[in-house]
Image 1 (cartoon, rainbow, N blue to C red):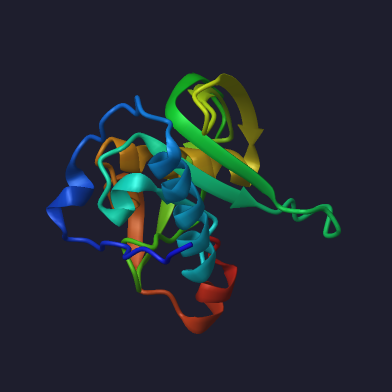
Image 2 (cartoon, one colour):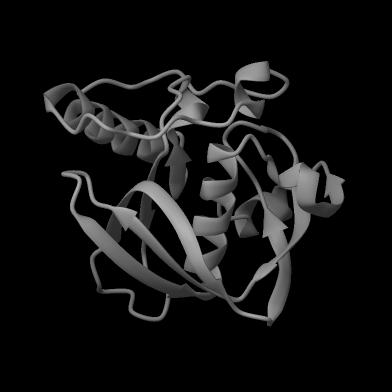
Length: 169
């Protein structure tokens, strides 16, 4: 596997709407694994294909449930994702981004979401998420539409060392 270069703001590629994935072949499968490896190395909990310069509607997420410390992290591959429902309840929390380094922001997001997508092999899937996982999905799917978290933030700031420990990208 290979580490990929994460592009950063203000690269205009981050503002483009990504293209629908139609080819789920060997090269695509390699890209998915390389994205997971790049995300972990960064380190982050999610990565969208536009962040590595690929115009594809592809998101990878690796999420460890904080309530169950012994559980293995859950891996998600969302291809061509679309939200089907979002809760009325929203939550403001701090976000960071691998493509917007050295900054953080307070962002209001839906507490819970439902989405439909395809898995890495093109099979339809449905996913429900709430809390931090729902936030990760919303953040990463925004990347597919050229939206960065500062666009939605009520406040963007340079985090202190203590803040950095609390930010989960």
